[in-house]
Length: 124
Image 1 (tube, rainbow, N blue to C red):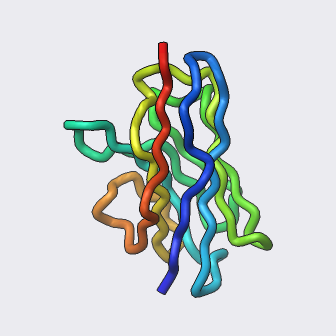
Image 2 (image 1 turned 90 degrees about the horizontal axis):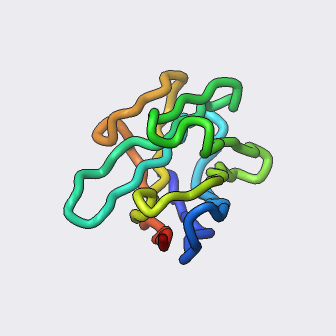
């Protein structure tokens, strides 16, 4: 069992930056791929970024590519999402999710563990 806790959300203006963190506890985290997803009001949860268990591989949704960076520090059991040049359409609740194994997965239903989410609001 892995417990995930997101932090770092908040209210910012368009063009600003935010850094989200996803802290893990319960089991060894370095065997898990981790993804970030987001869900805006009235919309389905969508993929944002994923990082492999080793941190060597990453993949991004087109909507955030070049603006967001996912990284991890397995010694600290933490995955990060650095968000730059934020836009109002980035407003959503952001979730991190984990699944064991080496595959990098972008579909939400394939993840086993989820955090409670952190709100990101970007004003225009």
